[in-house]
Every structure is written in C-alpha cells, then in structure tokens.
Image (cartoon, rainbow, N blue to C red):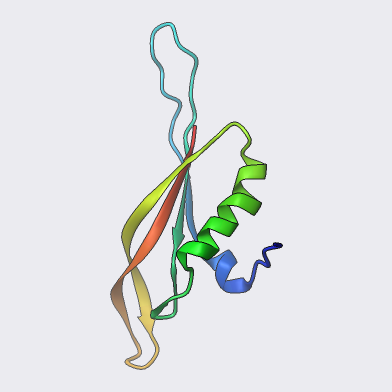
Length: 100
C-alpha cells in the first residue's frame, strides 16, 4: 500500500525540536529529536490509528532505520475560530515520535 501525503497530513507535523547534546562521563554525546503530530483535521479526528500505522511502516521506519519511539499524547494549541473571528485554545489527540 502506498501512502499519499496530502496537505493536512503535511500540516500534521506540528513541531520539530532538538534538545541540546546530553553529556555523561564515559559516554558519547546524544542529540534527541522530537516530532509532534496532531491527529485532528478541523474539529474531527482525521488521522485514524490504521492511517498512523501505515505512515509509521511506510514513511518513518525506512527513514529511521536505527530506531525510534512513539506514543500517544494530547496537546493544546491556539487556533483561530473563523466563525467567531477570534483565537481559541484547542485540545487534540496527538502522537509524539522521538529519535535519539
């Protein structure tokens, strides 16, 4: 099965953050990268568990062959409500993916 990346899927990548190198006596430096993926499209859940599994298997795994970890998360963000013409705080299910 081939996964098509649409604009909402590309917008699902919310943040990419890199932590500073961790120093420990006798060990090598480690840089950790974290990706946050929002699962809502509009106000509805748009990325199902099965779509996430396909994304992990076909997109992420081949690009991170040394390994990664992901888990379910939940996050808040400041969204713009066009109906009320104001910003509002929104909460949505997410996934966090970490590579070290």
